Amino acid sequence: MAPTRTARSRERVAYLEALRADVEAIVRDYLEQRPDAEDVTVEVLERIGPERLVQVSGSRDLKRLAQDMGLLVALTLVDAFGPDRVLTLRGPDGKAVSPRRNAREGLFVTRYTPHRVLPEGHQRRDRILLDAGAVRAVLYADTDALDLEALALLHGERPVSIADGALAELALALLEGQLSLEAWAAGIARFDTVLDPTAPVFPGGLELATLAGLHSPPPAFDAAAAFEYYRQSWALLRRARTKEDLERPSAYVDASGRRWQLRLDSTHVRGLVAEAGMKWRDWIDDIGRQMRDLRREGDRLGAEDLRELIRSVMSRDMTAGALDKLDLAIRVIAERTLQAASGYAPQTHNDSLDFDLLFAVALPATICTTDARLVRLVRRTGAADADRVLFPSELLAKLAGTTPPALPGDASAGLSPRRPLTPAEAQARLDELATRLGGDPNFSALNDLLGGRR
Image (cartoon, rainbow, N blue to C red; front, side, top):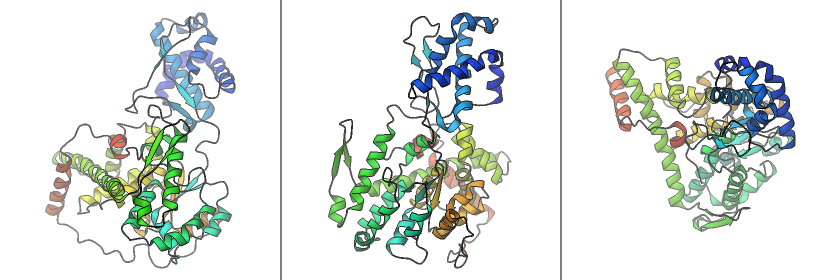
């Protein structure tokens, strides 16, 4: 996650202003020589020297001075390279920093906080993600299918990937006969012309959150290994021609010599999809419980109140800057929570996979879907990023810089409305949702909902 840029932090280090120009010069010079370095704070302290540091510190003790210099370096990095390129390495919980021991002699600090600056251009290109519905529509030549030839001409420098959740959905559909293996064999190669060869399927879960800058890298996080895993998984699914091909275990050895097992068999895939649905239901349960508690205290929550409540829940794992990137996802959760109080029951897994898609907007990414229900829900939120969830024709129009064609019928066509619940029924439904989780104090937005996929 990017270091904080709050006004309070800047006020705290204001007394070090005389050193700022030197700190900026040292940071840039050191990272030009060692772009992968993570000990830039130690380099700054060593070059400036203890004598000059003491001159500007006034009556502050060395411990406070060391902390403030670390903060000044972090702020300088963010100012120089932008928050999306600066990572502060944290512990397994994603919140507490993970300090390292200083191995350089002659300095008054024993430990420091590592920072890493990502390469220029990282996360700057807007990625296009295809959901399972968009892939299926092409295979079946539906009238609303994405025109892959047009996409190949228009996507330019925007890489195109299939969403992580779609990999499991497509595998399950093939295993259960909901997607024809004949249609798969006949048409899946058409996607080769548009898919990013580095990431034909983009990582999901905690890996997606890390790559989007929403979460600090877990210990030993290896982005290259993650991308290789998804390339291998896609290759296995792409070449499947029978159910036996999917049920048959496969493995590969990565560049470090580590052996990875690939599983697309029915037991494993069904388990992944079922787990995704359970995690989404737990989300609704946890927030529903908090709604119930507040209502019993006499508060009546509206959509804005719910959004703030959800931000509070998610702030256990993320900074304010990361939460700002997730405004669309937060608004969708708020909408779903309000619906829960009126009788909405989360679908088995679709809602959770949709939520993963919305997390990917923070990459940044634009989602291509044929799911009218998802598009309708997103646009109802009024989020600034609502235009990042598009039908295929809208995506192509956006890439071409033209007005999208009129869609046949309203997006909500064919969706039957629910009978509104009475106030007593709504309260009972809310209480039912709230009591499922049982008030688990260890609920964690990222670690529980976005567990690793591998």
